[in-house]
Each structure stands twice: as C-alpha cells, then as structure tokens.
Amino acid sequence: MLASASVNIAIALGASGTGVALLVVLRSRSSRSHAPEVPTVAIEDEKTLAVPDASVSVVDVSEVATPDVVVAPSVREKAGRTRSLFASAFQSIRGRGIDSATWDELEETLLLADIGIGLATRLLDPLRSAVKDGTLRSPDEVIAALRDGMTAQLATSDRSLHLDAVGSPNVWLFVGVNGVGKTTTIGKIATAQAALGTTVLMAAGDTFRAAAAEQLQVWAERSGAAFVRGAEGGDPASVIYDGIQSAAAKGIQLVLGDTAGRLQNKSNLMEELKKVRRVADKATGVVNEVLLVIDATTGQNGLAQAREFAAATDVTGIVLTKLDGSAKGGIVFAIETELGIPVKLVGLGETAVDLVAFDPGEFVAALFE
Ligand SMILES: Nc1nc2c(ncn2[C@@H]2O[C@H](COP(=O)(O)OP(=O)(O)OP(=O)(O)O)[C@@H](O)[C@H]2O)c(=O)[nH]1
Ligand SMILES: [Mg+2]
Image 1 (cartoon, rainbow, N blue to C red):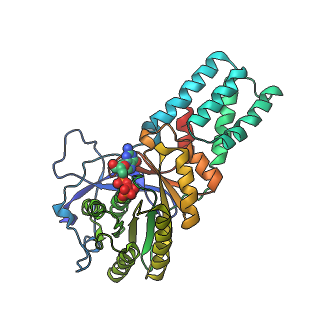
Image 2 (tube, rainbow, N blue to C red):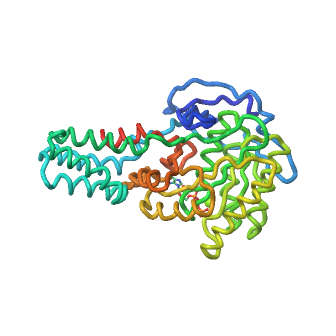
Image 3 (tube, protein in one colour):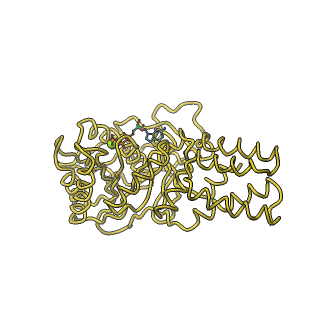
C-alpha cells in the first residue's frame, strides 16, 4: 500500500501563496540505475488519498505504475528556442557595436519572441534615447538595460495559487481552447499536490468527446486522485458541481475541474464556461482559481484567446504550456502587460513533473545568459 512506498523529492511547484515548493514524486517500483540519488520520505496518511464512494472512481495507487524518479526541469534548460533567439541577436550586436542596425535587430528579436509591437517599442525607445544622450555606451550596457526593462515588466504580479488549508473544497477550474494542455496540466498539478499531501479530486467537465474523460482518468489513476465524470455530451456544469459536492462530502481539499476546449461553435463555449462558473459557485466549495491554459507555440494568438476567455470567465492566472517547444516565450510579457493577468505556471514537457512555478527572474535571466 501507499504507506510502504518510498517517495523521492524533486524540485517542483507548490501552492499556498508561495508559488514554489517541493514536489514529491512516487518512485517507480522497478527503480532504475540511472535514477538520481535523492532523499526519501514516507507519506503518512494514506486514508486521506483513498476515498471510496459510489459516484467517485477511486484509484488504489499501489496498483498504478508510477513515474520514475525525475527532477523537474528548469526554464533555462527547456526554453532553448526562445533563449537561442535572444542569444544570437546579442552575439551579433556585441560583435558589431551599436549602430542603426542594432535597433532593427533588437526589435525583430522581440517581435519574433512574440513580445508584441507595443511593448517592444516601449522597451526600446528609452534605450535608443539613452544611447543618443550618452547614458548607455556599449552593447553590453544596452543589453543590460533591456534586461532591466523586461524584468520590470514582470515585477508586480501575485503568482501564488490559492489553496486554503481549511474549510470547503478549493476549486481550480481550467479553461482554454482545444489542445493547449488543460488535461495534461491538471494531471501534473494533481501529481504535485498529492505528493505534497493535498487530497485531490478531478472532475471531467469536458463532456464534448468521450476520450477526454478517459484521458483525465488516466491522470487520476497515476496521481491517486479521486475522479468524477458524467455522460458523454452531458452537462459540463453538473459534472463540476457533482465533483465539488463529492469532494465536500469526503473532505477532499482540492477539486481540479477540466473543461472542453471546443463545442459545436465558439460562442457556445464561452456561454458554457460562464454557466460552469455560476454553477460551481453554488456548490459547497470555493472557486479560488480559474486558470487559463495557453499554448506558448501559438504566440500572439494566445493573447487573442486570453482576451476572449478573460471576458467570459474571471481568469485568475495563466498556465503557459509548451514553452519547451516554442521560440515565442515573449508572450509572457505580452499577456501580463496587455491583460494584467499573471502567468503562474509554465509547462515544459509532457510528463508529470514538467510543470514549474513561473519565476520571472529566472525566466529573464535565462533569456539573457
Ligand atoms: N511539449 C509539451 N507538450 C505538452 C505540454 N502540455 C501539454 N502537452 C501536450 O499537448 C497535447 C494536448 O494536451 P491536452 O492536455 O490533451 O490538451 P487539452 O487542452 O486538454 O485539449 P482538449 O481536451 O482537446 O481541449 C498532448 O499531447 C500533451 O502531451 C507542455 O508543456 N509541453
Ligand atoms: Mg482536455
């Protein structure tokens, strides 16, 4: 059973206001020789993770193949495409010195990274003036000033995920267009939270396609979360409601609500999400996060999506997925400055540990190294 399983600690995300904590990853029963050596701890209360109920599918984690030992990746390591975009521009500017082409090159780099024209101009104009009046003299000084300017853009957001320790279940809803990574993100978060000792229930509010609930169920099985689903084509809002009520009845702390990325047409999706939110608010829980999932590879399109979803639902934060495969990491700046919505989490791959709390200092540093 779970109590006898040893677990390994890896760096990952947490909640409760800090944004960063430890993730405990269940060790694979067939531990492999290449697995890094890390300290082990034991999970003390297995009962809180296994909650039998007729309407809730509960998974005995001892029967589930758990992921091998893995350390959460870093943005520096995974956001290579955005990093190399900046690196090659800086190399060329340093090699040539400051001239008129410097500004074109910097602007082009910022635009390719999908920072957006408005912010690119706001970042570069003061640097151009500073070079003219002699305040900035060398390429290194210009690059350092750009770095400061970009850091300042991300300075003020509250990036914490709200998880109250006591009271009715915390509800985090996940919204976003199809294929962005909502279901995968829920799986990653459930893994991290369960490992931190939080009891989790997943509610399969994506009733649009049959495979969606099954996909979520696999993640529930992997992470040991309870699971609630409805009929295919059923009412997403009632699935979320049932999930919250089940969690409340069983004392489960966190409900992760999946939603569909598409319906028969787009305007219905927004109406549906509004209804999900209204109904969730009526259940015995507190909706304290509505996380909009955006695929970083879509760049500025993601910004358009964010506008639409933010207008329909009360988005509390962004999960930016697939930063590992995107050169458009600059979308972080565009989202935060244009919409004022904090990027809270970043997806860096497809496995359970490939999700980290967004750390603006680390992100900007990675771009400028
Ligand atoms: N490389 C990479 N792939 C990711 C990441 N997050 C999700 N994916 C992949 O993106 C694909 C779509 O992910 P889903 O979680 O099914 O997306 P969804 O938003 O739930 O999609 P719908 O249910 O169709 O609305 C899957 O193949 C995931 O493995 C990430 O951070 N990096
Ligand atoms: Mg999905």
